[in-house]
Image (cartoon, rainbow, N blue to C red; front, top):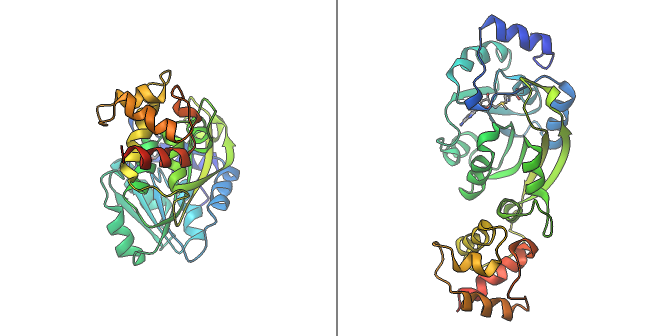
Length: 287
Ligand code: SAM
């Protein structure tokens, strides 16, 4: 069949199946082959790769993935899309569609069964309402992966990529950058989708580090400190940490740790690098 990246083919398919878009599932389907090609190129997919696609929709990007990868596993929550995918992907024998909520799927088990535990590539035009839980879930559950190449809201891509000192810098930047090297491959306007989203989009590739770029004794404590530091944006890091119900440290203890690091008592979270948060975590745990 002709590719779904041709907007006419997408419209015909949607009409044929009387498919109704569901806002609650973040359904904005791609209708631009240049954008899809950019995603595929940014993901650097080869015939050796097992690709996990989250939310194939009617299969627009899946058709391209199937042509470049060894195997594609596409996980789609909306059961109304499953019969459509049966038709649009009929000519590809290397695609498996799973009708499941990606947040409930045991992806580690899937990688073990389908790729003998070897690292996979994740590629998706993500449902924006669950961008952060999907990405952090993949990292935190230590799914073996080489990279995640995804379409996300432009503002979220910026937050993942920036360093200290920017208004976009926060807990998400630090969490993503602990696990992966971010690279924004393209900015994508709303007219590349049907229906058009109300926000701009961007394609970001997160290349997983084999070893984290900083060493820290207690990863979980560091992330608690990061979250607390950014919880109350206009407060100092000291107040954020001392007020956190997740952490046992007093203002005086935080101040002492900051002093040991040569940082001012009124420093704000947005000026600390990942390496500084790692150091703060190591020092404060010894208080
Ligand atoms: N990949 C298609 C494309 O580019 O045209 C569709 C992308 S659309 C932005 C997001 C897709 O994710 C939709 O098909 C939606 O039904 C699906 N989805 C939403 N929540 C999901 C979840 N929790 N698990 C799996 N798929 C989900």
